[in-house]
Image (cartoon, rainbow over all chains, first blue to last red; front, side, top):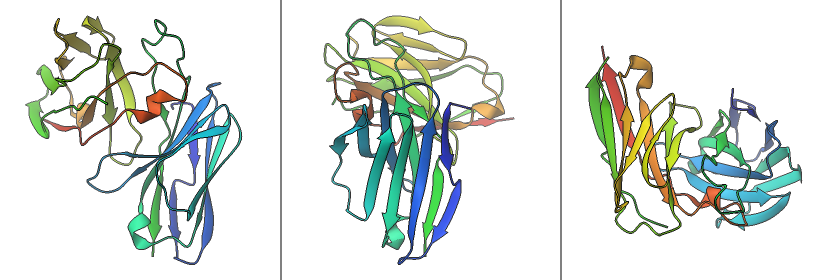
Length: 119
Length: 115
């Protein structure tokens, strides 16, 4: 248990469906992230939120829409996805180190992911 | 971001010590070296992090030579449950804007431990 909980664990959806992935962290962190991991590919950073504000959108298609209502919750809204969007979607959180000298041991805490299949 | 190079795969047997070396020739002064472990269908898990010399925790040791152009993750007496992908990440993790998220995971090293 990493303190980051993702639901659902598995999701199968059609290309015309709308669904949402949920992530919740119980660690008091100030930053949350969405990653995509396709089969045999490196982890791809999708979105970054720092203190509820989106600080990075890594050229992600608009069919993926993130939402961060507070620093503990993160959503990824999905609509009109394509089969190539099938992947493991991972949420992570961190206490963003902002002072040099205090960074040692800073780390990303990942959830177990949502395995998404788009039919 | 500093580019890292690590072996695609490694094999070992239970009880042996495993050393995975990562090359990062263009590491910058402010960069830290971090290692993560990932099991199938799970998120990566932090193992160890260092800046220079040697770092040891309950799971592993990290050896960093003086020039910091490489690092070696050492796993003592591996077991079957250590079979996983191991990622070496190098980057400046301090600063505003959640810089941790910009660390590049790459393809990692698939470690397979045999009985």
